[in-house]
Image (cartoon, rainbow, N blue to C red; front, side, top):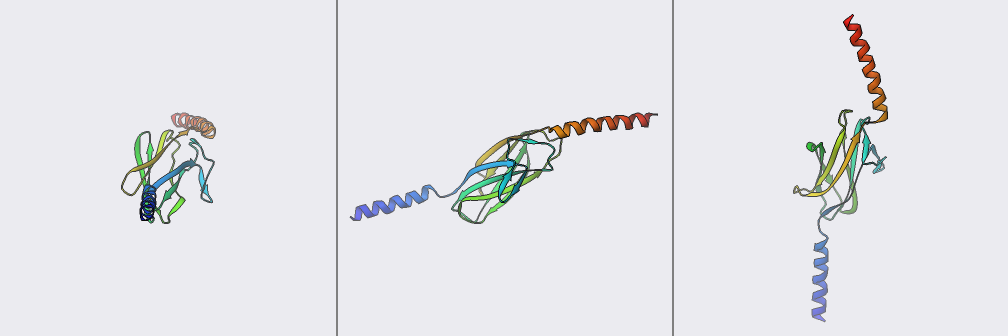
Length: 153
């Protein structure tokens, strides 16, 4: 009986230890965050947005702790955002945003790191030229040509 009790307690201790830590359940990127959910999630975001948002669903039993969102554009780190995780939870949601210039089309990546700098998860996505920006660019080019031709007169 004592052996059974000891092995049961040891098993429970190992079970608890095996699930200790911080994990990322999901990373979603999109146009905004409302009610702790991403608005218009996509892996192809238009470049006419003022900001892009990425939300991470975190599972942890180490709270309070910190995670980091590292933003990459075309392979180059452009931002690091520190995000506090205040409660132990199977689905604690944190998010960050990045201002977007219309010229920043191409490959993006968001890496989620734990407090020690270990990569927990990554999400790759693209920012693509929007139809709206394409028509505005043509108008802007036509306007600037007119201005240039007026300046040359």
